[in-house]
Length: 317
Ligand code: ATP
Ligand code: MG
Image (cartoon, rainbow, N blue to C red; front, side, top):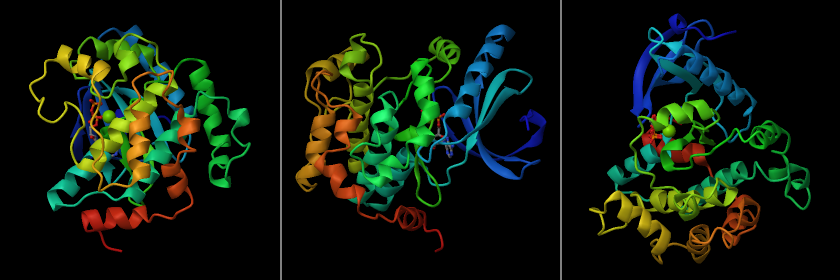
């Protein structure tokens, strides 16, 4: 059924971003614990309706690698737009690496491998899925049907991924899922009017005004892996923390991004290096990245991500 504001109890606050607040909530009629993201709404009711209509496209985004969407509605006396989604108990990869840092631990390559696989598969969306089954291992072929809805969205130019550690979530059982897909142009417009965040994860070509393309997601994946591997963001670069926004964007376009240190495997270091190719024409897309030696190494290796999150948060077996 339809989600209504009065059907929710707030359980806790999960986090805060540039766009709004995320809370853990109970949807009483269904008994489902959800994550509710509240974004300040434009006062114009026509714009509000348009945003809600566009957000409904998220229903088509069904995949084991995407956070499920339950619904969106006007909330708090029509002052906010609430987006209800699957609650991911282990939090975002940003939460996870910060916790690791606290514990003095580093994230292993098996976890990074599974992360790279999940993001690359989701980034495949705009490519021709008819060809996806050919020459693929069963594990990837398996995702063909569920990605169909996303192909549709992309063809409609209605999808925009925002790949970064805070938008990659983990469930209690250790599944890796992307969230915060930009499917509403109207919402993006209305956020742009208030948004002041720094676009650290944006690929050089996007900074220079090129339209969104799959290769841009691979760049963001490279920055995400460096950050999660080292428990700190790759940008601003170490020693450059005082860069003004213009200087930072100039750095991204012209200066080499740091490499991972040599206590990491040659495959991982090369994977990240390839992701961070400046020229989008020379940077491989997700299909090619899925054939990289680093992915090949982890694709057929079991990594117990459930155990990883249990140990991290000290949850019982
Ligand atoms: P930005 O606003 O720049 O995109 P952000 O991604 O951190 O930054 P939000 O999307 O508002 O901002 O998310 C804030 C935090 O809420 C996340 O970092 C994460 O810890 C938590 N969070 C978001 N969605 C969920 C979810 N579905 N389940 C559990 N925790 C979540
Ligand atoms: Mg987010």
